[in-house]
Image 1: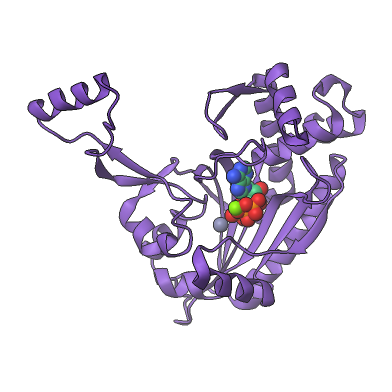
Image 2 (image 1 turned 180 degrees about the vertical axis):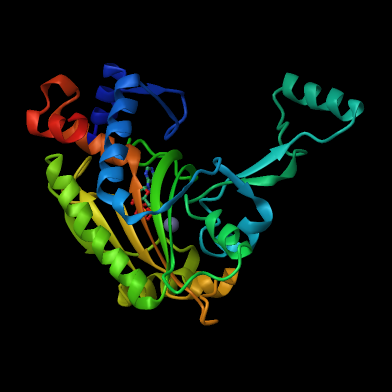
Length: 302
Ligand code: ATP
Ligand code: ZN
Ligand code: MG
């Protein structure tokens, strides 16, 4: 049995995570949620004075916006769509017969207008574009959403439905790159406050296919993505618990995000993987919160 399975088993045994029978789809205990809530308050303390506009979207987004985002070009393997039964009473009878005999009853399901949100910031860009031009001082937004990615795994830090807290900045190149740097510094400081050792490294997204390799290399060469890494299930391959993404003016151009001087807005987003951060805390400080170092509990609960 490998190390990953053991940590997952211990999480199940302690009740912190609840097995659903599907890899990467877990219930969580009140204690696990309390850690996430406390860490989110820590995020609020670090970012609160910036005056970000808070918005919360459900874990599904407008399919038309999803299509326009180009997600299927880059990550078709990760996407999840919502399909529903849209048939007649007759269709219903054959549906039930299909289920009865164990045939595939899902093949006649029809696509709805909703797709599962792949990253918390996706619903934001079209929303902000609809408002009209951004002031020269830019825009700053605070989002949190469940996100879906079809990447079943026995690694508890790789879930299929997980929460991402994000700050998204829109403005001039200087403005958004300063924002990203500020959050890299804050990320290190925050993790230190809760007793976690971190490294920051340049990274790339897992763009699909052979053409995707080029996109990934380009992203890496241009330092467009950084990750804050914490060893959870492996020291050799630490887990990305935060990511810091600079989109240049790509999202601005795609969605029509303009500043008052008619220039295309640059954008950047920083994301916290909330389950991963909670798991890093449980992995490093133990499964019993009451035994965590008092300095850590102080930072989280005051
Ligand atoms: P990884 O390289 O580990 O797959 P990622 O680069 O795909 O991570 P991002 O797309 O940058 O991650 O997502 C933002 C944050 O969401 C990550 O820094 C991470 O903390 C969290 N995250 C990403 N995928 C998962 C997942 N499958 N389960 C839990 N958290 C995740
Ligand atoms: Zn984002
Ligand atoms: Mg990934």
